[in-house]
Structure formats: structure tokens, C-alpha cells
Image (cartoon, rainbow, N blue to C red; front, top):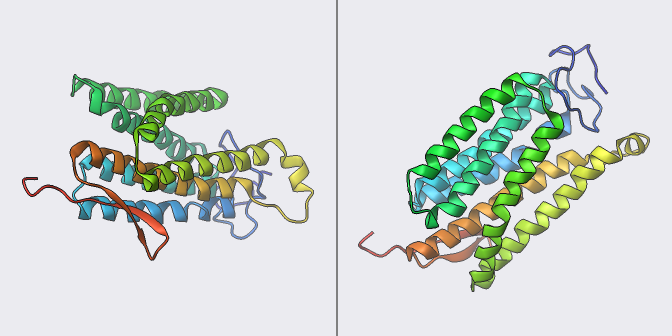
Length: 254
């Protein structure tokens, strides 16, 4: 699906997706895979506003910002299909997972400076190595391992949470992850068949949209759990009756 007659020149990325290149613009290689990151940015902005306005810990503001950086990096990658821009997508994916690991495990970590120092150095080394070497399958395996590291802790938070609305957030997180993964796999495994269809369902673009909501649900659930740990009386409330966010009530001494 590569097209060398484009603004960005020949494709140099190690991965292409099941979308015809430069159909709508000579500046955007994969149109739907590019614009489908916009919901992720909007949701991250909403989460950031909620975090800052209620003075949550800085880790959550950084987490929402990292979601935005990842979405912007993904837009650059899919718009250009260049190797350098591919790094701007894949490297923030790893950084984001390292941040999730910190947020999930740091409350019980006795050596407060050890974990962030190690994770920072790990992320820096990965960025350098990943910029010099192309490892397609290795990157995917590495990313899945980081996700699996987070899984036991997320499950622990879920089973110990007694709030029905918070549990619902966790279920939405799992649901969007499973549905998004299904579309990701369909786009990768059945591209030849899909390319012969009259209508391309744009599985990777749907993955982007669903993972934007997935990150928002995960962040909101973690904000709720952390607020409970800090004794901030968190509640899941709904903007316009359907959009969830966490409302807290800090003790006056804080």
C-alpha cells in the first residue's frame, strides 16, 4: 500500500496498516488512522482539566499529558509513515506504560526514589536503543510484557473497590481494551480480505478511538483509587448525565 508520489516521500516505517495511502491528501498517508487520534487528545484534555482543577497529585497530570503526547505522536506517524515519526508513536507508548507501572505500584514501594529513578533510566535507555535499532516483533512483545505487569495490580484495585461506579469504570476499561484489540487484530490479520471489500471498516482507526476511551477510563479509575488511599472521599459523577469523572472532597487540612 506504499505510494512514493507523496509529500513525505517513500515509506520508511517498518509497519503499514490496512488503509490505502494518500487517498484524501498528499500530506496525510493514512487519513482515518491519523484523525482517529483526535478523541484521545480531547479525552486527555478533559482528564487534565479535572486533575488540575481538583489538585490531584502531579503524577495524574503527567499521565494525561502523556496520553496527549502519544496521540500526537501517533498522528505524526500515520500521517507520514516515516521511521522517525514511528519512533514518536512507539517510544511514548513505552513511556506511558512505565508511568502506569509507577502509579500502580508506588503506593506500596518503600524506597520512594528508587522506582521513579529506575523507570526514568529505563525509559531513556529504551528511547536511545529504539531509535537506533528496528525490532518490530520485539517491540510488540516488550509492550505486551509491560501491560501484563500492570494487570495484577489493576485487578487488585478492582476486587478491593466497593464502589459500584468505580467498578463500572474498570469494566469499561476492560471492555474497550478487548474490543479495540479485536479490531487491531482484524486489521493486521485479514487485511488482504478487507482490501477486497467495498467498505473498509478501518479497524486500526477504531483501535485508536477505543484506546482513547480505554486510557480515559483507566486514568479515571486510578484517580478514584488513589483518592481513596489519600482519604479524599472520591465519587464518580457524570457530566451531562453520562460522561464519568472523579469528584473529590479533600479534608480542610489538605
